[in-house]
Length: 112
Length: 114
Image 1 (cartoon, rainbow over the protein chains, first blue to last red):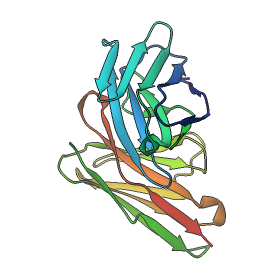
Image 2 (cartoon, each protein chain N blue to C red):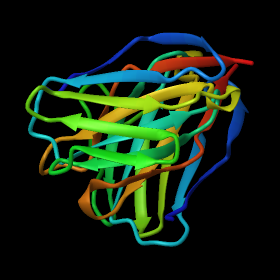
Image 3 (cartoon, chains in turn blue, yellow):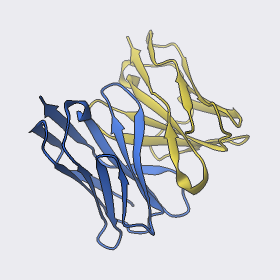
């Protein structure tokens, strides 16, 4: 059974800091890995999708890496802003399945 | 990008009544849709997988008679919470997947049962 864990569970930083959010999964037989953002009481916004054959993806100030063999992914946020405050979730589908297994999430608060 | 619309965004109902939540893929055809449930400060838990034209597949522990799922067309899936009780109060989110397991999510529905 796939289990996805995210560390830290919560993070509070001043504006401008560079951040690293961690995601680990127990079954490395994944098709891809997605990072999502969720604002309070809202749905999910897909941030980055890394295919299993890739090692990283970048979008603006966000960079996500994937190490399948060790079962880890990191989301790097450069020069954090108050607008980055949200919960960040990683999720993986098992090969052959489309349903996602979500991590426990990291609640990020960036203060001005 | 693909858009998934979920309606309503918020609903309050009385205990014992039923509530229907709609999930629509607006600009693509989704043969498979997924329903998730999220309790406060917790992650998303998959409830069921909905395939167009066939019965939904429920995850272990999810009551299929309580959470009725219908996927009548390639663009619409509905979740009906029957005989709702306060413990059913939660945030329900749908998603639709296209090729390569890319998932697009709706905005979610906040259900409060009073």
